[in-house]
Amino acid sequence: MTGRPGEWEPAPAPADATVGAFARQVAQAAGDRAEAWDAVAQVLTMDEAAVIAMRGGGPSTAWRAGARWLGDDAGMFWADLITLDAFARGAGRRELSDDVAALGRDHAAIVIAALDVVAHVREVAALCRQEAAAWGRGDMGAGKALRGREREVIDARLVPVLPELGARLVREAEAKVWQTLGRLVLAWLSVEAGTDYQRAVLDGGRG
Image (cartoon, rainbow, N blue to C red; front, side):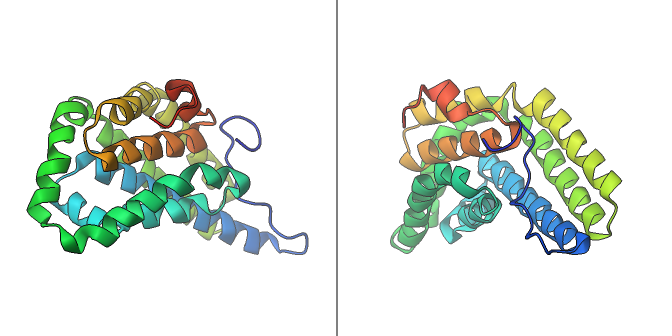
């Protein structure tokens, strides 16, 4: 990861940018991070609304926007996002009920036991939105404090659960799209926590 472990920052502003312009950039990045965390919560819930969002490309769009600030580190997302794009493009040839059933089987077998983590994922997303609002109004102190609170929740509530869950999805899921989602959850956690969980729990493999 770039920078100090866990200290995610958007790309540096141009040298001639004003403080206000940089604050707006950070606010946009925090808002994009909120959407990316919402996508994690959505796919882990995987109810019918989530399946519809997957078929429409919603989570892929959210993760692509969240990754655009990462420079070279964004490469960890691209192959799996292409797979999600293919899933969405092919949705017109599949019945919604078939996707609900197929995704539901792996969800019941692997995800449902860890479903309590979704509330904490949504908490991080909400904190990111508060951070975005703080930066948007120029309150740097509040923005930095909220970023610190996000890290506390990530470290205390998400890191104990998501690496194992992501690894199980990659290794045990029958549906290829769930294997892809497992890698993407690990990639996003890696960005936010400052540890390469894809490498740590998958031994550098692709599942």
